[in-house]
Amino acid sequence: MMKHITMETLQDVVFKTHPKSLGIADLGCSSGPNTLSIIRDMVRTVILSPTTTTLPEFRIYLNDLPANDFNTIFRSLPDFYWDLNQSANPFVFVAGYPGSFYGRLFPANSLHFVYSSYSLHWLSRVPQGVLSMNKGNIYISENSPTQVSEAYFRQFKNDFQLFLRTRAEELVNGGRMVLIFLGRLGPNHVDRGNSFFWEILRRSLLIMSTQGEVEKKKIDTYHVHFYAASKDEVEEEVRNEGSFEMDRFEMFEIEKEGDIGGRGVSYGTTVAMTVRAIQESMISRHFGEGVVERLFEIYGRLVDEEMEKEDIKPITFLVVLRKKAMD
Image (cartoon, rainbow, N blue to C red):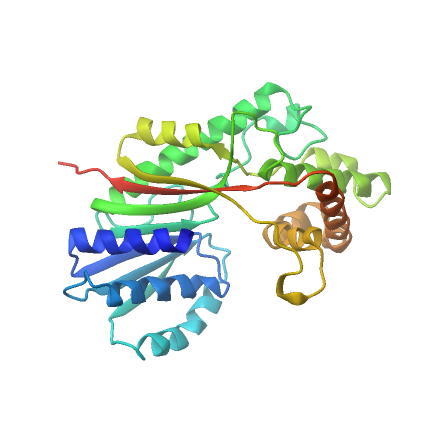
């Protein structure tokens, strides 16, 4: 469903702007197999669309933080180009753009379409002051003072406003953004959704602390730069910033999937593998590489135990924004 909406939005922006040179940016592209597969789908969608009268050239900008493995992406480009040329002969130019998307990345009015998948729930930094007032936690928890959730919300507002403002400078009038990110259903920051996975990570670290495998003081100084916004919060910030109209807002509840690929693993292990892929480098740097294997073994077991009591229901938002016409 999310892919269908993405491609439909891209088709519409090409139809309405008629670009000779189509600028597409993938923000938070990572370096796995999905990086170029989504770009391949975008190019093919434009090529095969019945509304495409004149085929544009494609300027593809792949963005992630400087530590991202761009070399792996670049090594995949010959196969990517060869695959595309089997069905047509599009002019596709791919470039890597390292840097934070909380700030300017591209020339003014150079983009027609911005895509970002599972990146915008990451804040630019851990909110200032939360370490000292949220000891024993790594995110917003039931025993966190209200100042902690307020600090996280304030950081989200600052980051999201900056993201919208800078993208507005880079997009042409009528340009679109498809943003896919984790969210929450209501006003309560502590729910049995995305925030609960951080609570389980905290419990896993505390178990290791009681067993002498992790220092308690290191848990007190580790927080995640994550925020699951509510629908109302997202809509309010879009209105306040003022550069975009909201064309679409969809909420998806991620289905429970265990034993992906028939590997004989539980749902908890699958979730643990996902969280590990995101957090491993940060956890290794803070706690030491030796804790990772044991930590996520405990984490997977705790997820399975919780799922036996009650489902954990992570929520994903899909937001389609259109840049307003500017003088």
